[in-house]
Image (tube, rainbow, N blue to C red; front, side, top):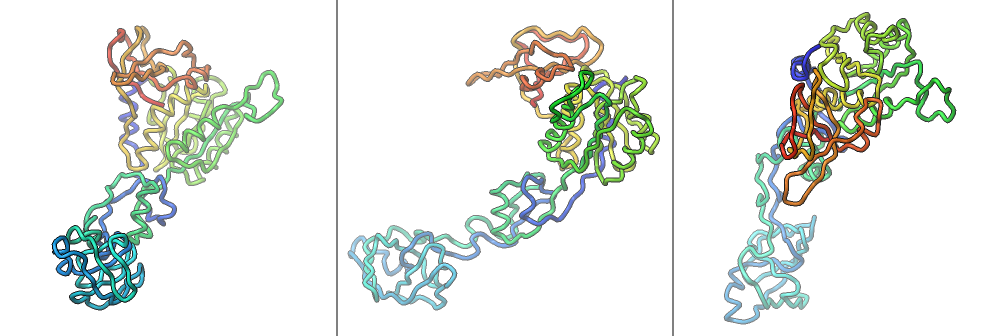
Length: 402
């Protein structure tokens, strides 16, 4: 058996390179940018009005506080999308709408409520300062400015910005493709109403499918296989040929007479990276590689499978999307004594208590059995306690969040 850090290092050394694709913008939601984005043009693209009103020359109204209202001739109109193209002269005003291009010669906009529109002329009552209510070209950013950084996850607001700049396609990390391989003669479908008393409903397939999607992956195939070596080899070969980046197997990785995943994987060309880890739960985890495809043999117990997914599969999916191979954690304070008297790293499920203006605290959940799904349902995360190590009440440690 190897330690958890050793296993993670082996995994890190064998990660496939992330795939980068030039994707249509409307498909990029939740994808991670694979490059910095620099503005191909300034924003705003042209100097425009921030208000409905009148564009004019500051020189004509700069002394309005002393002289009183000023009357100007309305020489034309600039609408959003239909600009006024002539140069504006002295004592002239141009009727403008919000977003309309500011005509050449104008350097201030007077709002509708600060003027009287007489049709062919306008009386200006108030004008506070030059460039009032004008959005100047490039004031948000100039052409060439870095506006989005590599590694950023694209959400609706970033997609809006890219759309406004005319970027129809961007380079992103592609969605990892995952195939599921669920073993177990005793398994019935989770939606079967009637099952034999020697059967159990499959919790792993729905759990792993959901976990993969939560981690940004896509399930492209899900097979259920009975505990038979020949069938396992045949069906696993089909999964390999499906074009996936990862294969997740559940069950069949221990040392029983009906555990065939490891033997089947190596029969079709996978090379073992590691098998059996000093961790609880999840000791029999098996990881192998063939070309650029990784295979994870997760234990059959749902809690063990889930914890192995959290510790090894989820960081792998993150790395395939341009993230570092890291687990997300918070620092929290132990509420009670935590001890590990065994010989393996103990992944203990915990609940978190958040207190305003104070360090969060955690408590061990009473039920920790690898067959007890409530131990993860009721948990907020888990702590990793090394063999022979103890945490006293009030001591701080990292809690890895679900």
